[in-house]
Amino acid sequence: MSNTETHYNEIIKWLEAYCEKHKAVETNRGLEYSTEFRKDVEKAKEVGTEFFIDPMLPIDLVMVSRTREQAHETGEYRIINHYTLFWIVSSVYPSLEKRLQFYRFYLSRIFMLRAVQIIMVVPVTIRRESEMLLRKIAEENAFGLWRIETSKEEPEELCTPKDYGQHVEDIFKNPPAYMDMECFDPSITEKAKEITLFFDWPVREAVEALAGVDPREAGKRYIERRILDFVFKLQNVSYSHKLKELVTEHLIHKGSDYEFVSQTFSALWTECKLGVDYPDFLKVYEPPLYNIFATQEKPYRDHYLHQFQVFLLGLYIVDQLYDRFPSNIDKQWLITSSLHDMAYPLELYDKWAKDFFKESLGIPEMGELDIRSHFVDKSLLSSLGFLINGMCKAHFGGELQGNWLYKEEALVKFFYKEITQVKHHCILGSLHLIKQAQQYSPNLLGDLFVPSALAIALHHEVVWRELPPEHKLESLKFSSDPLAFLLMFCDCVQEWGRPKADRESVGEEEAERFILDQCEVQGLKCLVTIKTPYLSTTDKRFENKETELKNLERFLEAPSDMEFKITLTDKLGRKREYSMTGPGTQC
Image (cartoon, rainbow, N blue to C red; front, side, top):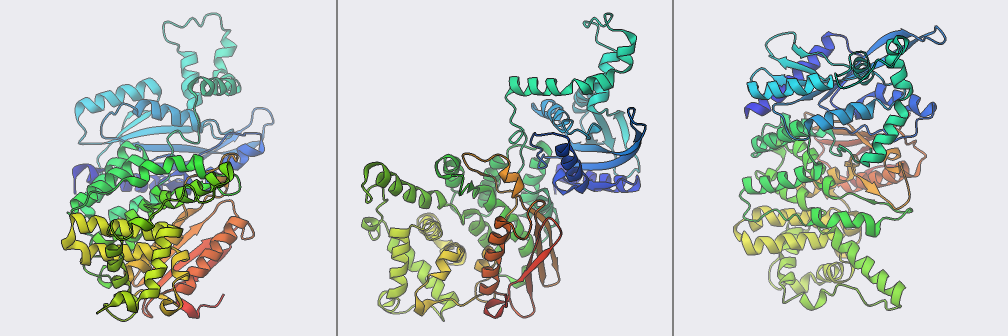
């Protein structure tokens, strides 16, 4: 474990203990988990605040404390929430100062949320030159700066933090030499804070107009902080050390989620010596999909960050239930989860191209990607052979022998149709994986790539529901194919942090947002809860997720001594529970 990683985890735990000792109302590793923040946002909306408040800002720790203050106008007392945002740093990077300024300014926009302080936290081992630079940034911007030695109970406060209003008030009272403040009456400077807050809104509007700030995108984080924390609990996974280093680096520097995912998957594929480079196809081709395929009726939603969050969720489950999976499950899971939606752009493109030529020129057969002529000469048939053999071995009673093309003709025709006509991303993605392994890593084909390709091929409901009658899967048993079971389970439950966009709506993404509430593995029980802050059980989006989970519940069959359960909770706390018990499930 690297020093950076050790310091980061130790400091987070130390800060949490410090906040608890000082009786904080709430302490969370991100604003999205704060019930008090959500309440303050709703209060802001009630008094006319119309801007978008993004709870997914990359904050290491947020502490909520309270004061009881008397209003000047009415004399009545009210409770005010004060937010302290802890930002762990180990060095100065180019965007640090601007980002901290933005977060304080952005969060101060909430009407009742004037008390927002930012404290930079450094380990006692920080280099002296880095600490001096951070102290300069803190002093110039009224940020706090703490040096922490985890063996001690209190921090060493190098700079005292101030909220946005107090910072402006201090400038008013003690202006720099180049500012001429003599024209102001003393009564004005005495009420500098109140005056500053009164005129705060035109300042905000002017800044946004000049800078072009889109608060929905600035500093946006989609990957749940809670699921990143699972990484530091890994004990059995072979590449856990490398993954912890990569996640720690991301948490400290808080860069782009998309670049982080790309770099992490690439590094882990190299770490595992798979013989194949991680194909970054989806990262390159997904962004245009938001513009091409999104409509008001059916928004396009992310599949790239989704793959990574599926990976992390499943990896935690694998690590906790390690003895119940095959010996090479960690590498199989990396391959499977990181590629399971890779071919999604190809499926969508083919549908879009056909519709385009049909509607614009009246030629329905144009634009279709013709794979039929390449089915044999591009080795798709041989790749399909590995896939069908793997399926029969796992689910239909053994490996194929003799003239299996004749005996399994119905299955061959089914996959041929899926490949050449439907072009379903599950099947195309699995074939891509097998082809790459055949070319670059044939020695790992049977142990790693074929099981992964089979899981990818089966993971979507459209595929396993439409298998031919003689190969109908009434259920998918964990005991037969734990890899496919895990992918279906994690793929279905991973509903949080999936950006989506249509061409018209504003704020819909926030309104339909799900949150990972908990993921616990207790003994042989895997319990995952997702909830939504805004949806009721009668809302269409909630009902759609219910239907999806019910279908999964009927299909996945866990062993009798294990439990895989998903709980879906609405905004009022009403729960729906789904246990993966196979065809006997009652709805």
